[in-house]
Image (cartoon, rainbow, N blue to C red; front, side):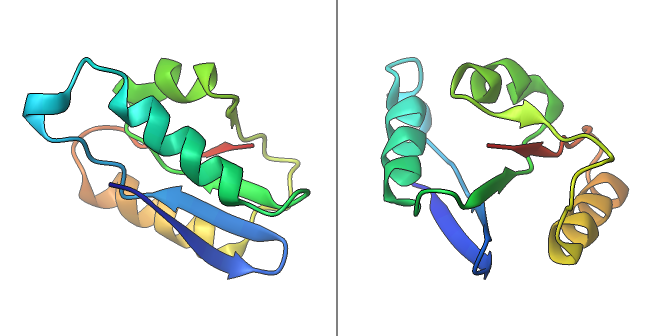
Length: 96
């Protein structure tokens, strides 16, 4: 499962990606993410806040590590900070 959440007219967040243990290793997560990305409007910024160990998975799907010079929506910054203050594992800020 997964979701796209509208932040504003120019930005959405990809999140909630989960695959049951019995279906892991079969490429299901990539299919879910690609399906969701295909539903996004062209030109919209897509933000993603994955755990650090998933970095290569998202990079392979076209995401990049966010740079400080980008206009990052306040809602994304707030969630990113909350995640890194709440979870033991590092959370990344990626965009596409």
